[in-house]
Length: 163
Image 1 (tube, helix red, strand yellow):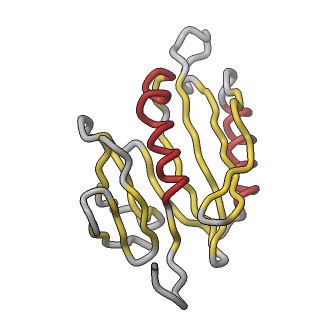
Image 2: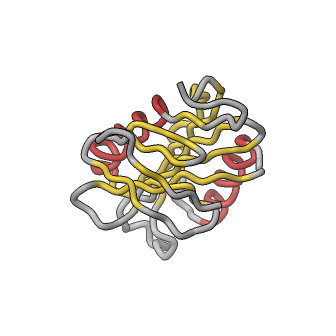
């Protein structure tokens, strides 16, 4: 379900499903994947780093799927955080994990950090996820952007409007 969006103000984004404050030094990008609601990229980068998607799978099953899949595929996979987080007045789950490339069988490659937040609203699960980035880049750019999204995202209730 792709959604066309627009900016309400210079630092806000809204489409037919959600709205949020755009993190500082980030921009919203159009996405073409059917389950992606929107994406974000740093203003100095042409790569989408954060995506917001929806699914029918529960937040706990989403997180369990990541943990089970990555821990069996990647030898240096490690959960850094798996904790509850409040998102749009609902309890969600924040998962932050470190990983290496899939071909790093000698354990010499760099460590990458990724994160996701899964939460349910109006009988649908929403996932805010980040691509793998270096630990330094995650701490300086991605983590603050994820926090802005977590604190500002609002999912539209089709029975009412945003106020």
